[in-house]
Length: 306
Image (cartoon, rainbow, N blue to C red; front, side, top):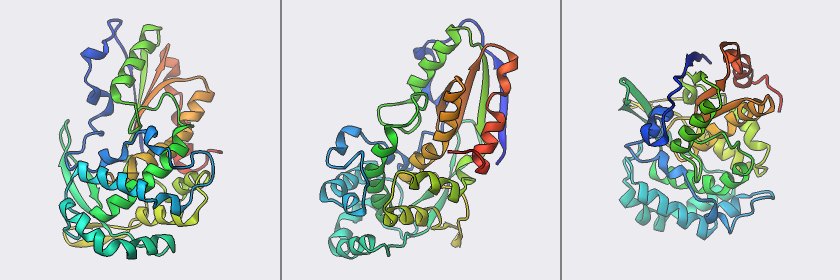
């Protein structure tokens, strides 16, 4: 894992939130014109039927209410077809015939996800960004899992984390950054985890998930999604690392992994804002610019302790 770090001195004339576009902090990574990542966001208020504090099981993931909400999300977000070519508009009719079989496989721990379709989209600052588009059926299942497990992790996430979270956005991160600078922290350490989504260590990530999700049917299914493979130009390659951007689970999984970073920065009393894999530290002087550098390497190499 390569980590790019830069230190800059901010001007005294700090911008207000209305002067800064949220995408400037998020690096454009929150955008998804194909329309799949957005389905990850979900209001905690919609989770009333799920147990937030105890052990979650697959039966709760597959309740009629949770699946109905997941289906609604997938339909609202539309998005491109996956490797099977099935459009979102075809999903309901397909489920009427196939859902009993799919549900049975999920409950028995036998369901096998399909590979994602590799699609390249232009980045706001030039170049291209890879997305992995799941089939609409897998988007439905991922969304249902997301809705079920998100509240379990959300209640412990850092207040300084703003990306892909219910009720949080880049504009709030910009405002927090402005306040840090106003208090004299005019040096900014910009930490960008190069190709973070493509290099996530599956074992480290699943260790974090399994701390709070104990039903092996759920955790094994999440691992299968990580290892489902990527189809590009008609050829499928095995996924040994990474979590492709494009599915409802990907943003939540990245926040789960990087929560260790947030907690360590909080323990050290650092002032920071994180939006997905972009993290800015705000310090008083040039001496503070190396804060978190070795820490990031430890976390991503799996050496940091829980």
